[in-house]
Image 1 (cartoon, rainbow, N blue to C red):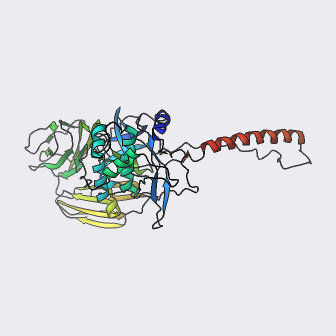
Image 2 (image 1 turned 90 degrees about the vertical axis):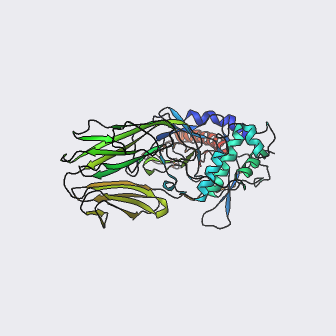
Image 3 (image 1 turned 120 degrees about the vertical axis):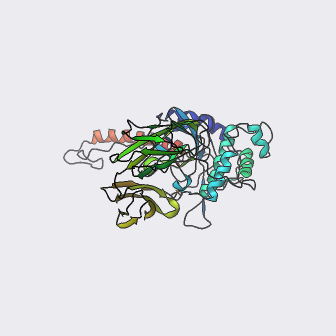
Length: 487
């Protein structure tokens, strides 16, 4: 028989959406490790997209071994200031925590890194639903007859193709019981993972300032630049936070005051000679689409499933930056950091825009940065480990970077029992924990048959009630067996 994904779609969508948490975009431009363009919260699945597939997934540490999985497939949602970012999962082995906070990141910030696999996932996203909204056009590319492909099937094929590259999953024609995979899903999956998938490069971020800080000295030379990086077609509004100190202004490369910018615009701080040491903070804001293929990771590196953008939704994006200066020829220290999965830890970028060398202490390591120089120091961080790295430098400079390295997907959970064709698909969202009532430690034991405190009649009644309740619980467990384990 053909697996009943359409029935699963109708039955499961309402329940998945009902439990979602609606949240607003947090308009902070960065965290301790990076300045970012968009942050959002997980908001459940997209209505009408639910289906399921049967997969063969490799077992880590056992070459040639695999397990059968039956995961739910659906488009998921992130909520950003009322706008929706549609996303797919790129981490089959990790559950999604309800209402988790996410932040936009680069490919190197995810456990997949910037690799051939990630480029092929990006090709899948740009050649499948919802980017290709015309299902007949998508069906034609995959050799499927017109009118024979529906949304749940298109989503299931795309998600299975993504898991093929992210987790090594295979979509067989039949499951272990010999039941056929839906033909439309199989054909579209074959097309998306076939020879035409040559990969696509990483898309631009929604908005960020690169770098997010610049230091210098008052005088004729402006301090900077901070460069605007965005995919926005429209203008980016840039402004000074609060009141600029006297003799200080925000200017462009031409030295003129600037209020509107675009991708590639360079921002500088013009600081008159003799100005007391200080700081100028700036913000950039725009309304832009989140590019397909942008990765979203758990904010503050919390353990939750990594997601990737599938729909170019428009959201409000913002970024922050700053300029600092000192009036005398001396070191002007600065530091930023970012997890780099490829280098195995936290990369701390030390800057010195002063006219004298700057001596830094990065954890237990001393680093000297020459005048007008930059150095990078890699602090190794083990996988799934919280880190706190303190950086100190001249002029009382001190900064602490904290977070968690989460670059690798954990190994898939191996089922103790082989799933059967009628077993419900595994939901990807983590189920809330339940706590069963515990017997009173001070009451008499049901095993007692006499002696002080015994009441045989009462105990017999309790035992009978427990037997009835136990029978009902067994019935419920049998009905729910295998259907609540989330991926």
